[in-house]
Image (spheres, rainbow, N blue to C red):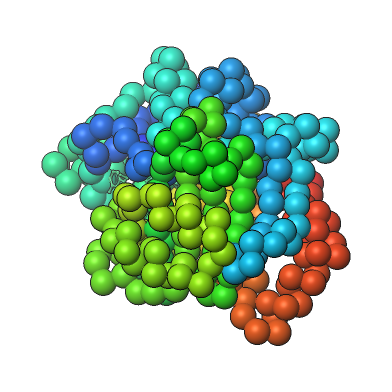
Length: 393
Ligand SMILES: Cc1cc2nc3c(=O)[nH]c(=O)nc-3n(C[C@H](O)[C@H](O)[C@H](O)COP(=O)(O)OP(=O)(O)OC[C@H]3O[C@@H](n4cnc5c(N)ncnc54)[C@H](O)[C@@H]3O)c2cc1C
């Protein structure tokens, strides 16, 4: 008989897990509390480690139809505009890592995963279903929704994001904490921009206590812009998406170079996210215990300075499917295997993302040293084979 899994959360991680596990022969019931599968209007970068998996799931054409595939990542000084370093992507990424480097609207990524999940006979999707609690014993798990529904399954997967309730039941380690950094995000149609502000590449502008990332999405038709600055959010940290004051964005970049000021000047509409965090994972027990496992931000929320949060959720999904495909009746052992395979890589990515934050926002002598090192070693510093080769490296 098929193993039965309940997944909590229909974000990128939950959908990826439903897809990969259904294909490994697992009967999946996915509960999402929202009334529809939606993602906020923002972009994500997908390294070749992630694109390789999406391609292998048979979604290469679907990805090609909606993503952009930038030729390079250029690092510039936010203050002078000078180029600090370049990482070639495009064909080099294919040759070196076996897959392209993609940039995509979150909603497009979610939609292509959802369409693939809906083609799987073994998956049931339940909207308006909010997870409340679970109990587990030797025979299985019982999952309760806030509306009083009760589901029986062989195991439970918490893919319910950074403020995961499944995690709270499993680990009881409290809420994530504010990083003291804010992300302002905007999407703008490229043809509405003056020619000199349009872009086909990933650009990272580094400045004291701030950085800005811009890259194309929707086949290059839109530009996604993220401005990260220091500050505290006075509103609900658990909600990703707050209205933002464009004057505040312009003010935070008042010392920036002309092209960057021009870019934020023409964007009228910004959204604001407060970035919250947990420390890097300390062991496999933080990713699975007994018949309950965690995936994506529920297991390892991270600052977005390595652009791999969704990527690690997708890698988790593939690893979980592999662990289950080879599993016998001992499901806790299979989940342990999944946790053992994943936690160290997730912890490494979390730690590296934190370190990038310090490097990107450096001031004084550290900033001077960073710029010098970037000029001397450029691509050698920016390329990350341990990451882009994927988990088997
Ligand atoms: C500014 C910024 C930029 C980023 N850039 C990148 C990038 O370039 N590349 C990258 O790979 N990652 C990036 N990330 C990270 C990435 O967005 C996240 O890591 C990823 O979305 C996590 O997916 P998830 O499915 O684990 O969680 P989520 O996307 O948070 O999904 C969780 C889902 O669970 C549902 N849910 C929650 N609680 C319940 C409940 N009790 N019952 C039922 N459903 C529930 C929610 O409604 C939601 O649909 C960025 C993040 C930020 C903040």
